[in-house]
Image (cartoon, rainbow, N blue to C red; front, side, top):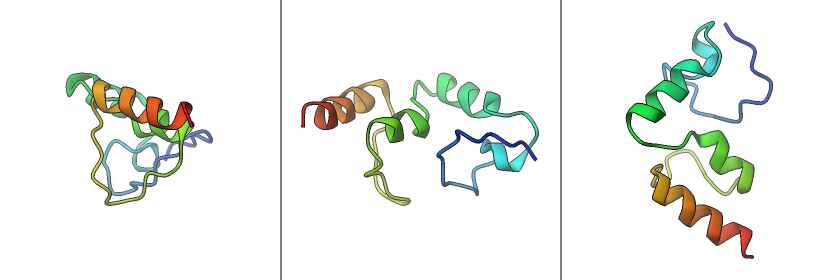
Length: 73
């Protein structure tokens, strides 16, 4: 399996998580781009208040709102 030391995603059941294959972050990024989403690691770089199972808007708009909420604080 891939060793991606900077990966902060805790969803190890996701088939795109680097812990489940040897392709690094490429499958995750490709999936996010296809779905017009931002990867979890970008959200967690701003704030780690994301908990597994929490409803989160992973879209570009959701990321902008997350950034504004935590960077203005």
